[in-house]
Structure formats: structure tokens, C-alpha cells
Length: 409
Image (cartoon, rainbow, N blue to C red):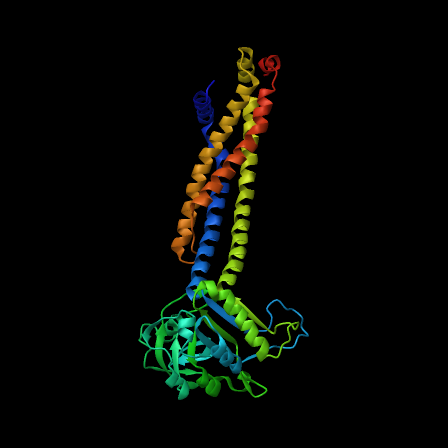
């Protein structure tokens, strides 16, 4: 008996018990749908976060005070200073811009009756190019603003929307912590970046921030602090060289010996993307595993129904064996029936998963991405479940004795 004949027999057997076949496939449909939908959510989250992080600038290198991996509560708090920025700006090679930043604590930013709590970032004109911000309306801060300690501010798109709604903010006055500032520009939207929203930002000249907003909190031992220093490497190939230079210069600035532990952390966007990729890949695999569990449960249901089918068709199996059918033919017939059941359920499940991911995507809350890899995985898992669920019932059918099968009532 060839494959096409076995396939027709399988379809007739499934059509003879339509309701039971549909209910049996339901477990496969839900399982495959869960695999496709959950992996689509994981893939979409990975693609979205990666594109947003890359939007900051793939050549970005940032220095933070302290060691991120350190968890000792008795460790002395580390600081970085404006003088560190000056040394880096003077001595670094293979960089296009260097920008220091001091990020203040959240405080009310108001316009009329509208108010938002957002941290204010004091920085220099190089900040926009280093962090890949583009001004949509107005202009960014200048060296003249710094020199005159001008009370001017540039708003992120979300901050501007929260404060002004549909009004053009440029030229209007806001208050930051009760101090009036003139809005001179609004950034183009960048969206969430990592664990924060890059559009919820207020940027002021660094000297203005020191003078008007941060006070003694921004100084230590009479020296002005910075919360980070960012720089843009001239090309991706020199990022590692820039990191080495930064460590050498700041070791000297902080009077650290070669065997002393660094009291700062240097991160590049490429390293961050690698770490982020590992995290999101694990998340996607975990979500897919949850779907696979439900698919395995559906496979157990298929096995149960196929065992019932073998019992119901015992006399048919005995008759086929009596007229010369071999064990291999009987086993292949029942295995094909199981695979057909699983394949149809799998196709419907892929459609269900795609529909769920499409509806989730339409909600605008989560971005989903159904790629070819997801479909291949869903098909592969469906085939494995079908083979797993069909082997034992098929083996049991092939082992029946013709005489006992014909006597079966």
C-alpha cells in the first residue's frame, strides 16, 4: 500500500468521526497557536528594543561612576567630575564628540496648570550628536547659552506633549522646580530606549543646571560632578580602542594603580546590544517553551484518541492481517492518521497564532513579529508531537494477533 492510499484511508477514518477529530485537533491548535503567538511577542519585543537602542548610536561609548557588577554595601561611593570630562575631551583620539551630563532628580516641570515630574539633564551642545537626538522644532543649546548660564530648555517630544498638548512650545516659558526657563526646542520622538523613555526628557545647559537647579548635590569636595560622560567613536572599528583610552585616562585622573579596581564603568552600545540580545533570546525561548508545554498536552490527547481508535478498529486490523497485511503496513497506516491529524491541527494553529499576534499588534501596546523561523519551529514541533503521539498506538495496532483481533467483540 502506497502513501497516497494510506493518506486517503486516514482522511476517511477522521471524517467518520468528525466531532471527535475536531476536539482532538483542538489541543494541537491551541498549542501551536500559543507557540506562534508567544514567540511572535518575544521576537517583536527583541526587534523593537534593539532598533530603539541602535537609534541611540551604535558607536556610543558611555562612562558611569562606580562598578555596575559590585554589590558590596560597604564600598565607597564613586564619583566622576567635570575635570574627567575635560581630560577625555582633550586627550581622546578617534572620537567625534564628547558630552558630559548631570542628571538631576525628578522634579515638577510646569506650564500653566499642566505639570509633569521628570529629571532634568544638564549637558553641552555635543549631547545631541553623541546621543543621536534630532531637534524637530526650534534649536538645541549652544556654547553662548552655556557661557551666559541661560535659562533655556529643550524638551523631549512626550514632555512637550504632556505640557503643551497641541501648542508649539518654542518661545514659551515653563518652570523647572519653580524657576522660569524658556523653551527653545523640541526633540523628534525616539521612543523607549532600554528601560526608560527617551522622549521624557528636559535638557538645559550644564552650567545653568549647576547654578540654578542642582546646587550642592552636584558637588563633592568642592568639585562639580557629572553622572555620565558620553562619546561617539569615529567608527565601529575603533570602539574598543576608545574604551582602552578612556580607562587609561581615567585611571590617571582617579590616581588608580594598575592593580587597583576601577571605580568607573565603561559601556559601549555594541556590548549592551550583545547583552540585551542574550536576555531577549532567553525570554523568547522561555515564551516558546510555555507554548510547547501546551502543545505536548495536546499531543497526549491525540495519543489517547488514537489508542481508542485502535481498540474500535481491532476487527478491521485482524481482517487486514488475515488477508496478508504486514505489521509495517498497519503501523504506517495509524502513524499517517496521527500525522494528518497533527498537520491539520498545526496549520489551523499557525493561523490562530498569526491572528492573535496580529490583534496584539493592532492594540499598539506590544509589537509582534511572526518570522519564518517561528513557523518552521511550529511545524517541527507539530511533527515531533504527531510522531510521538502516533508511535505507540501504531505499534500496538501492528502487534495485534489476527486470530484474537477477529474474535474481538
